[in-house]
Length: 246
Picture 1 (cartoon, rainbow, N blue to C red):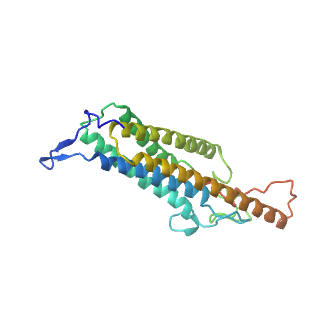
Picture 2: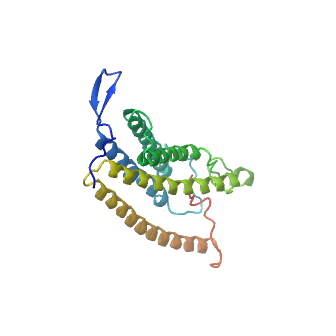
Picture 3: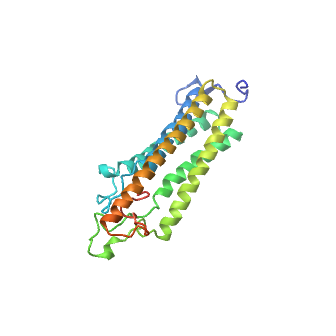
């Protein structure tokens, strides 16, 4: 890798301290890599593969951090809030010590990553209500009480899922660009290797968890279909039993 580029400030004067302090860009790099290649992947893998196995009744408890049945969703939601909060703080500090927005390729990728991350958090508020025949607010004997954006897959929910998942891919595109351009500006031996290792680990875990969960879901679906006298040629609706997300 090339040496640290000369336009990167190595110290900054802080008025509220009344003195000049050195700028530790290595701390910034470690923080951002830890966020986007450790914390965020954990939050994504947990909601993708941490959901409980399908049942006929599903999860009755309210979607809440206080209910253990929704631990996988709580880790995803609040873990991402924490991660994006750290990323936003890291970006603000970087812009401050740089004397403003530098306009470099790294700064563009970095700001885009954090901005999209913040939009992901705000977009989560638009996911709608859960609903379901056996949800805590529902009466199993009154279909009018079963309504939920997720249970009924309303246009609102479909738009949310389309945006949330698509934007997530773009976040990682910009995150990869930010990390690559950052390491070009400020080389850190070993950090690139760490990132590659994290990507490979996430890939292997995804393949293993996907295979395991798919096999388990198929077996459970067959047992549930048999118990419910559903012909094997028909599919079982797990909308209430195994939510894609809260």
